[in-house]
Image (cartoon, rainbow, N blue to C red):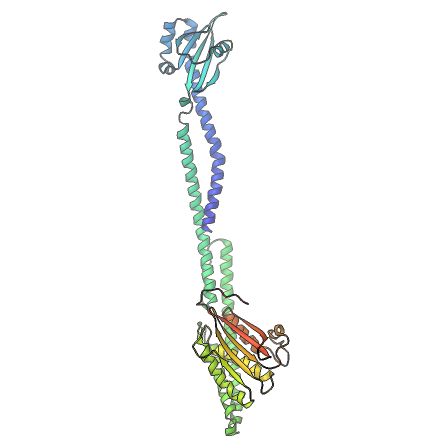
Length: 431
């Protein structure tokens, strides 16, 4: 912006300077020429009284010697067409023509101008005083004046660029502060605020940003309180359920383990909700998948479901918390167990690309007839709320990735979760 303003100020100031200085430079040149010709006219007129008294060469030479033009060899006197003093440069025809006139005239020569001043001596005779004005006299002081005007134009341009740069720097500083604050807020720094400064438009934008940040902070605080409150309310039915399971004896051990995990998740939700903010974390996706498949394998064995975990042998880092990734995997595997018949096979594959990590969960069930509708929360049909897909989709989009539903090689549905890794610089293109 500062560079653009500088170029703009140079262009505007240059046009203004040229529109004024070019005519002024022409006026200076014309003034210098008029001054030189007026001086020649004055010196020629100084000989008129002498010619009225005498036309002798000696007298005229003595009178002409008192003029600067004669001392420089630029003055001549013609009496009845004959040069009686000085060196003539004007053509004889022009001299004769000037003698017949009543006022001074000028003629242009290659090296300057000649002023011809007629003087009437009597009824039959006339004289002409010739004064030559060299080109150097015509342009005396012109180039110096032009140099001053050029320096003045450059100073005006430099001054306007400096003023424009200061104004641009003020705008740029305010815009950069606003951009930095927005970036910090986007990264989770809810305490980021800026002091409104700069032009009125940026002051208004900064004020609106502060108001937005305050509102976001309030909404997040209310959401955390609501999550904590709901989680606390779950403790009572969970406690009752635990007592009921304790009465069933050893055969309910698997249900007690699931209930213990549910209690841990509730505790984790309460702890996370009480935190004012949470920094970005990462986890090993392979470890999370192995852990979750170990959990679900018991139920899969009871329902005689063949399953397979592919690509989860080596560590694969992803920039999401382990709890959130585990919750998304549980939601999708829960959909497999709820919406496919017992004995239906499923597989989980982990794929590490150059700039993304993919988790593919496939089953051999009836599939999803309308994937687009299934991605809309509360509209997936078949008795499902669509919450599982929504959880996975929001997790993927939080990293800049995406979720896609298509048909698996097993004949049923396949859900693809693609997670972006900000540490990788290469741009990811969605297929």
